[in-house]
Amino acid sequence: MTKNKFLHEVPITAIIVKDEKFLIIRRAQTKKKFPGMWTVPGGRLEPSDYQDLPKDTKHHWYNIVEKTLCREVKEEVGLDIENIDYLTSITMMVGEYPSLILSFIADYKSGEVVLQHEELDKAEWVTLEEARGYDLIEGIYDELVMAENHQKKTKDQWRKISG
Image (cartoon, rainbow, N blue to C red):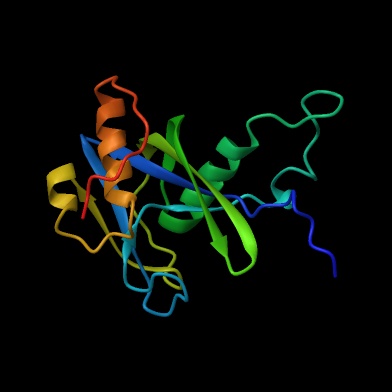
């Protein structure tokens, strides 16, 4: 089978802000990648997220990443979000397949945290300082720093801050 070098898996994540705190979630111990570690909500963009929808123009669908992120957050933690804004991008190899992760910041809109228990086992609203005390997946703390700066209207690029 020939692998298409232009295809990427596209996970998307949301740093959700509510009352100057960020939602972090702990991955279930049964997960293959990063079991028991803390991260932020998200999921994967899939063709089914748009192929069955009417196109916004003759050839294109618009705002699909944002719509998918809203759906994924609702499924994973039961919350509605708004004011979604791009934060950063991450690439990694998952086996032999490239993965392009898009990270966003979003405001809490409504709802109570209800976890998708096969995926997650805990959730906390934390300040940036409190986040230091959690076993976060590498890079997540640094993204939280970016999110806090974004809240202060200071946009910057990701850089490694945490150990």
